[in-house]
Image 1 (cartoon, rainbow, N blue to C red):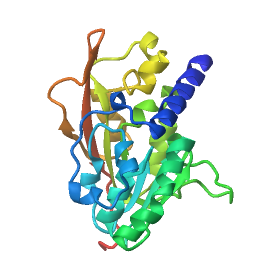
Image 2: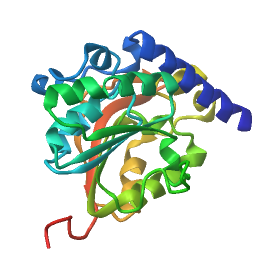
Image 3: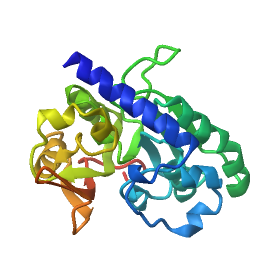
Length: 260
């Protein structure tokens, strides 16, 4: 199992590192974004974005946003405009090439929209509690209003998923929200497919089973957990398993910042 985990991690790093340099169409499903948010974003960032939905539609003005697996930065830069100068956006990614691409665009986007409210952090999305150079957690507890992700949670090894989910819950403030676009499947993915590095890095064999994905967030205490988008036809079908693109949302109980 250890060697499989290493192979999966290396496969993701290599594939997305290459995809930061040259667009790879196989890594994404067609997604339409509101073009008004794309005008301020450099074309290299837009072209090298890989996802399976648009979780940015559930972000609000003034939100503190955490983008897990921020990649080229497109979703984070869209959120930067939606939340406005009073909001803030943190993108977390562990791929050096993707971080270089997203960070290189920060100044250009700031010049286009008139303010800077986004930063990109080097780290594993399942390890948001890991210490930064100052000794503080990568992302502080209860410091985020909405966690979003676009086709990245399926890349996390199953052995680390409990830590991933726990950290999503930890960083959210009362009434915090999730908007997660990902690949789901209609039945369990067998081990031999999970151990295929190409299928894993291609967002296929690490897909969450549809009902289990909902249950995972319900067990964390999220309410109104549901799919707000789900492809009608399968994105892929492999060994009789159907894979779909979907966006899941939910909210924690409590009073949001400024509502009391």
